[in-house]
Length: 447
Image 1 (tube, helix red, strand yellow):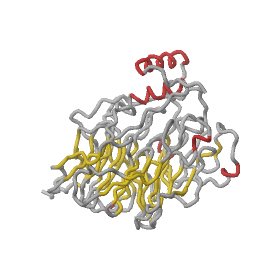
Image 2: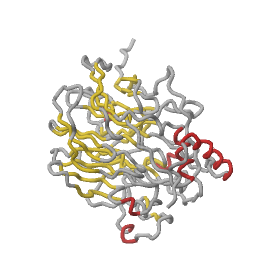
Image 3: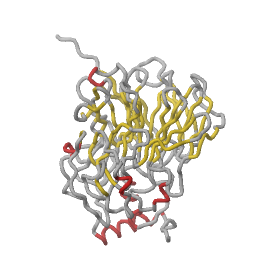
């Protein structure tokens, strides 16, 4: 196969613009439905559309200036720290230290003119920001929500994303491997060399580079979200070996098995506190319409198949995949909860703290990075999904908004979430290069 990977980077924007203008195909799709009709257990799924070039509508980045996100009554928000390089995920250590993973994906080869155009358009949304490849530590010593200590905790990594601490072993999920580092309580930097636990699917394509990570409650296993190597199999099914899956990795040996498959891009993993079941958020496929396919939040069954690439939302066939696999489609599990199409969920936090109002306890916060291929824009906020009896129990609620201004320009884009030692919600904003802290506000006494 001939590729375009050697096209000079300085020529790509001009070439992309010429292709867009010449083909007249990368416009905005104005036929999107109401996103709220796709939130919940039974989303409205319209007929699919196919495009030679998908519609693209990306929010231009303008930054925050003096603005901050907006939160509802009963909450307050402020910047925990600023000045990061593309902060993508967060992890809170037992002593309360916050690890901020600053990372972006490796440069991918270009195989089609569509890849040039898509990459160029997404660059306006911060997708091509400089990669720090490091983890920064923040320490708030007096509990006032302002860190007094900020250090480079771990450096020279390879597009890291997931973090998990098991005892005194800290596991980092780089894009191509899980690496184990020794960790002592309270240390502010790690200089020891890491030890590779297992390889993960990486390049040369590495279409979905983030590898989410979660330790089992007993620490004996690690669960890893491994995204697909394409939108919907266009790089060949061989490129998808052990991808679009959630791995279960044995901590003692590094051996792994596929815990669940057919999950296009499982970007966040959490244990549901009431039932102890594994839950995931997933980014679904593109290029079949502004309202297809809804991204989702779902429980994950051991051995379950969730459709990708052959079907979506259960047995809804994707005609772009040939040959089809009716044997797999017959077993495809429909997700538990739709978040609406193209919201790009990249952060998940089950809330068990007490720092926020009681109505948030037991539910799930989801960081929605936001769409790049529909009109109107969708996502660009943090939502809350209430749970009851271990399952979603109502419509998603907007909790942290204001990432888009009145002109639909992006001040920031939320990604990873975490809960700090005082029960506040932390949000990595990879375009605003900020970590936001959302806490409960103290009611004013009546006059």
